[in-house]
Length: 376
Image (cartoon, rainbow, N blue to C red; front, side, top):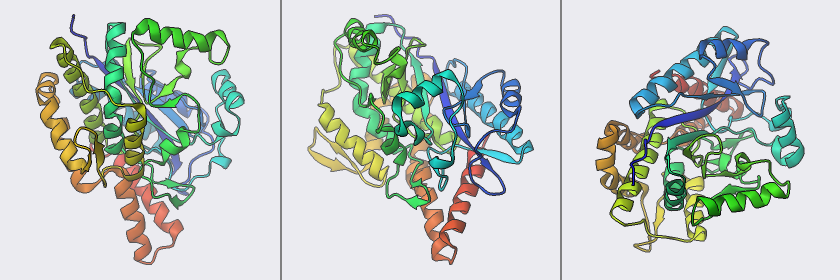
């Protein structure tokens, strides 16, 4: 079988905050999105909520190029936003913003979504990071999707950045996941025997008018309907850019591993979606603070131990892709915590020091503003 090109790209969704109030803006200032688009060579667009924007990198040959691309996009957004007294934050939820105060973007696509989903859509004050890796062969794309589903909890756990919702410490590392699961066609993808089998299932929904096309499948892992890629959507958006590169590099390396196994006529062991969903819940609830279930061993294994095992598994692939450094950065995340861990620590330390909950939440926003542009 011909080796896939394994080119990579990332989409990130940023929230825009007022630097004075630390709250989300309800709408972007006139002309701001156009300013960013000009600076970012058109690689930016609106999102469902008017307080959000989305950026997308160009197709990149490796993760080093990907980081340069993403750093440039973050820098462009921040510089333009700052001129308006605003700033982007790269986090999957805002610490205290209320979805009831937000407005959806007045575009046909978003208006149709709001109409179809009702009140569920209005709660979508969340942001994600989507990683695309080119898998040219369609049947191979489906085969790898079936196997890579196992690792979605691992990718979610190390990316978590959404512990707060409406000013409440939810106790979850990824509350974004809870909000997003209120939509249909989310969570783990089903299994399919081939590309033709997948398309038969999609077409069954399209023919009935339930969906327009496969872009309305919002699974954690899906074949993109626009590009020849397998798109990973399970993760929160990482606040720190290097954390995001760890997630993207791990996903890329796992795809490389699965392809090598296929060449040796091997496959990752199959587990039911029921079992994999249990690990997704653990990642959503605890992030990296607690372990995931190792179904082969029949026990819960600490995430740090699982990460060591993952690095051993994919090291050859990481060397091939030139992303060993990015994967080693995962140990830094394990030592200091994900964005979710850091946000909760800042909040609790501030409250313990005498700050009001409102003051503590504003300090969390200050951290997110600074961390979003750190190292770019």
